[in-house]
Structures are given as structure tokens and as C-alpha cells.
Length: 487
Image (cartoon, rainbow, N blue to C red; front, side, top):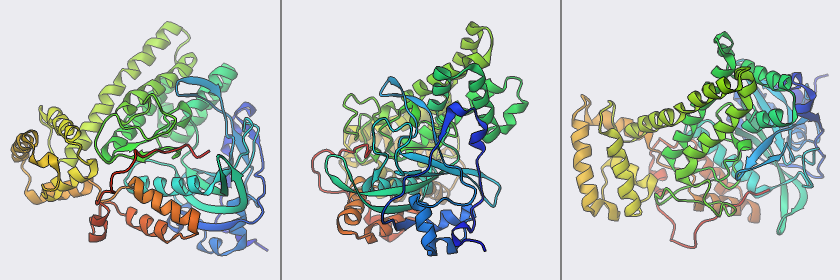
């Protein structure tokens, strides 16, 4: 007789095709009293999971790691990484890969438990996670998905019935995370530092097979792999910039090969436009500030390219030249993606020589007059140029004349421009005070209604409803907002 909890699970374990140095088989550590507090029905359906799954007690046991879904061979992945510039051995210290779900569309996605107990790579940690950070990752990752930004997804959150201890006593929780894969720049760094060339080759071949199968036909598949990853990261970081998203911890172990955003610890969204904005409490030097995200991505990709040198060419000098030429394309690619997105945010369908300067002049004026990033573009979209000091400045008035003249150069109606800007400028983002309110209600009062309402409104950020307009109201200024890793 089929167990209810097996309905819809279609797991494979292709990661185990890699040499054993890349993982350690590890079972989740059971928890006392798991309780399901958040389940993503839409994501579950796309994964092919039966909707009856969540109605069973066994579902909660799976989300907590107390039971394994059919086909699961749990393991922890090994990887390394540059953390704030310093290289170290890492690995899944509190995360366990249950397997890879094959969806109804034939896609392969990782199913992970985060906060599921100690592993070989825990480095003295307890392998657990607190409820607040797990709900935060759920909330922000789903908001990013709705904003059409490549990201890991969140399927479920359970409380464990156990306390964990950080600076204070906190309720424990486990997140079930979904990703195209958890292959990282740090995975390749680990192979290059602690494996043999054939281990590195096996990893590169697996990556190509999983994410870039077409490059097997290329004359130089490993060079083609490097170029693909560079392009995906250039596109991803440009999308972060469009919504004022600041990742906060762009270590090489937090850069995926697939081009998805991963790790939502100290991330936050910018209100007032300032390229020097930093939220993370540990980023005292501003390494990962908003304006530094593109060059840090370039730096991380350089570390990735270094790992591939033995595969690019037997002649090291020639391999370095191939890698440098590929890396030199990143600034151009990023700028092209960034400028294309900024044109759309400003209703520009065509390309003109002065577009770059026009976009940068607006941002410069926004910074000078401390204008809210999201609200400025909304005001331009709906032609509501009031309520901000920016709009009364001579710089903005001059800019607005140039922008108006620029729009007249294209054969598009005002309605066309309006529709493009509506689709490109979100009415709502996960503003930091809203996120904190939702998390506080859930963690401190066991009230998930605030979180549910916010998630519902964030699910369609380009709907521009009356209710969403309320979210444009900014909080009363307080002390500078800080985020924490939540480990």
C-alpha cells in the first residue's frame, strides 16, 4: 500500500555520480515536535507534488527531516569559498540535499533541508536554524521570484519544537529549499584546491550536462561553460540593481553556477538611493555595498575562471589568456543588461547614444536629493511628480525635459510607454520595515497573518493595485537598518 507522504515525489540522485570527495552521505537529525507553519502550494504544484501531500502528518515529518521521501539518498555537499576575501574550506554545515525532483516538465531541481542538523562540514556549529531567518528566506526568495529575478525557491517552513541558542534563545525551524542546483563557484574552488584534475573535470562535465548541455557541441566546452556563467551572473546582478536589492554576503560560495540568487541572510532592499548602501552588520568595510555588487561579481567570476585553467588549455599561459578574454566581457555584458533594463524602467523602446548618460544623471540626482529608489520610478510611471524634494530641483527639471525629448524620438504612444514602465517598475518590494513587522508577528506572537498578507501582495508586484499603493508609504526615520546572517 502506497504511503501518503510519497505522493508526487519523483527523486533522483545524480549528484552522487560525482567523485565521493564532493559529498558525504548524511541523514537529517530528527526533531521533537515539528509543526508546518508555511507551505507553498503553487510551487508544490509545479514540482508535481500531490496537493493531498500537505494534508498528511507525514508531509510535516518530511519537511522536518524526520522521514525521507521515496527515492531520497540524503547528503551534504562539500565546497569552499572566499568569505569577505579570505579563502576557506566550507560545505553544507546545516543543509542536507534530499535529492533532485524531476518535475512534470522534465526539469531537475534540488530539494534541500536547511537547519536539519549537523554534518561533517558543520565546523562546530549546531546545524540548526532559527524561525525568523527561515521565514525571511521564504519571504524574500518568493518576492524575488515574483520580480522575475532568478532565485532559489522556498517550499515549506516547519518549527521544530526545539530552542536554539545564538545571542539569545530562539525558536528552531527548518526550511525546505528548491533550486536548479546548489553548484557554486565555491564547489569548483573546492575541487581545484583539494581534488585532482580529473575530479575538477568530472565536476565541470556534470555541470555542463545539468545546466548547459548545448555547450558539449562547442569547440572548447569548458571555455563555453565559463562564458555562459559570466553571462548569467551579469544578467542576475543587473536585475538586482533594478530593484535596489543588496545581497549583503556575495562570498564565492554564495554565487551559483546556474545564475540563481542564493542565501538570504543579511540581504535587504534599498529605500533612499545611495550606491554606498550597506545593511549587513558584519560588512563594516562596505565590500558588498549596492554599488560594489557588479565588480564583486566580476571578482568572484575571476576566482571561478582560475579553477578552470587546467581544463582550458595544457599551456597555462594560453589558458590564462582565454580566461582573461572571457572575463573582460563581463563589464560590457553587465552594462548592456543594466542599460537595457533602465531603458525599460524609463519607457524607452529604442537605443540612442545618450541613454547611458540620461540614466546615470537621474540616479545622480536621486542620490543628491535622497530620493526613494522604488517610489521615484513609480512617480515617473504614473506622472505623479510631487512629494519629493528631488522633483523640485533644477537638476530634475532639466533631466525631465531631456527625458521627455528622448521619448518623443521613438514611434510609440504615451500608452505604450506607460505600459512598458508599469511592467518594469514594481509597485511593491519587500521593504525592510514590512519584512520585520511580518517576522516579528510570526516569531513573537505566533501570528502568521501579517506574513500571509504581505506574501499575497508581493506575489504580483506589477499589478499596481490600490492596496499595493499603500506599501509605497515610507516608515518614520529611525536608526540605520541593519541585517544579520541569522546563522
